[in-house]
Length: 259
Image (cartoon, rainbow, N blue to C red; front, side):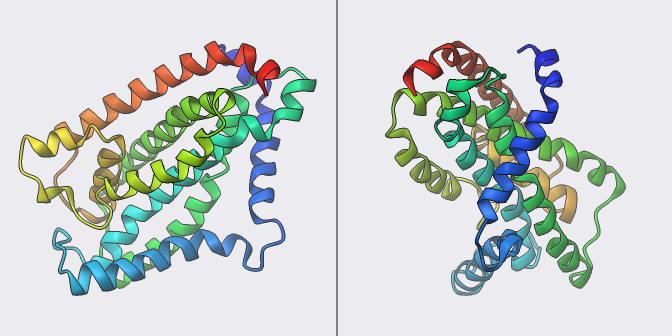
């Protein structure tokens, strides 16, 4: 992957990240408040229809915070993936005119979703105080590991889709559908505990399942401690990341000619 080259271009990654953040909120009325509004309003809708009307279980956690806790890593993942999948096409002028590690573009796009997640976490901390839910020290130490899995998942899938998008321009139309389908295939509005073994472990083949369940466990004490399901999700994440990295590196030589 030539990590040394990426390190030499770290300032470029920083400026690309900052550019993505500014472009996303340029000429908006509410600005970065959208980072809170989107997951918060989704949580309200889910609480009404799934929590109250449908009576979906929430592992003995109040449904609003149960849903909102899952929406934070999911929104980070979805935003990073959506941005990363289109960044090679969006950076066509840079790619044609100057040399830099093309990996910098998807990496910057996923990093650009981090501030939104940090802002959304402020609401979660307030909700945890209101509901008197406090994480254990051990679980809290593991939280960065689970966030890293979300980051690697978004980056790995972003590598695949951004490279494919150069060759097949209709990929950009498929990405919103993929994200929407993935959303409902992930235990955000419902807990993974609805499934019995061995199906629960197999459910971990969706890498975001392990991220969401582990995230809830680390902050809310919800569900079981990280086990086979999270391990399966982590292995899938690493597989997607490594394979996406190699595919991106293989295809990047033709980017300037095809774009």
